[in-house]
Image 1 (tube, rainbow, N blue to C red):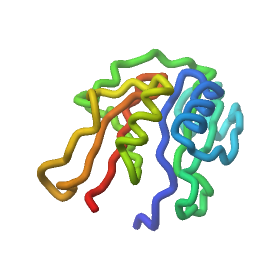
Image 2: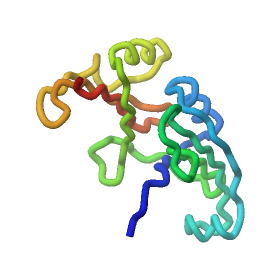
Image 3: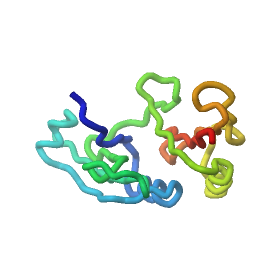
Length: 153
């Protein structure tokens, strides 16, 4: 039986650049990093001689799970993978949604930092359980889709 939630993870091209972006642009807190090049990791990921660089991050002020982090970024040093299309309508492609209290302010701040959004401005949610809120998709430097959401008041 599942007992809780540990973390979510994305594979990135350059761990150092991604950590810099996720901490400076999104304001996530860096928890720790590590390199994994051992038998256990190779078995886990099913790649012989796997070598990974891993960074663990968390949302400041959120309840910290036993793992001490919410988000994990992984760079495969060996074997290097190839970039794949990350369109959100492709099977297996995911995204993370980050809750904000003022989406318009965050949109302006992040636009000034060069973040690429998928809409020209935050989108009003006019139907469903989040009716009255706002949302918008954007991408990280690797093209991974992320979302800001301001829930209804």
